[in-house]
Image 1 (cartoon, one colour):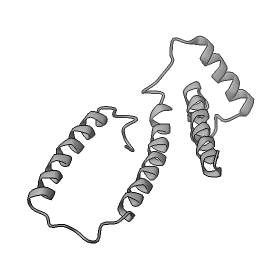
Image 2 (spheres, rainbow, N blue to C red; image 1 turned 180 degrees about the vertical axis):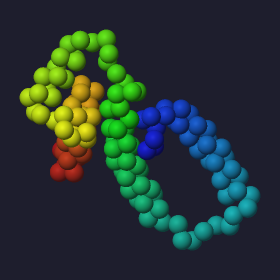
Image 3 (cartoon, rainbow, N blue to C red; image 1 turned 90 degrees about the vertical axis):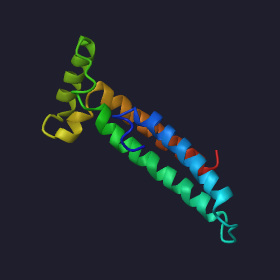
Image 4 (cartoon, helix red, strand yellow; image 1 turned 60 degrees about the horizontal axis):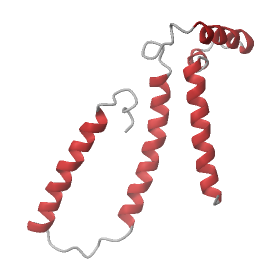
Length: 128
């Protein structure tokens, strides 16, 4: 999930992997394993926590994938370049590579999306 922003082919590969593993584990559980007495609700809760951590890593790595100008470059849109130049001169971020990477249109959209996700998670935590 971490690298799927840059390599979307990982979704079908992962789906195929999980389908095969599902059937292998199902056959093993029916034919080979004995009944367990130690399974409880702790394993699903731990798995959900790992998915939350995976979403965070996905957003962080995706930020660097989507803001890479060699991958996604709006070269034909003069208006976006003009806005980027105005933003650079207005904020003065040309000295710091980290901030200039996110100062283009795609980076700003990604930061807005990331802020929206954090806001929605915060609303869910407080019970809205």
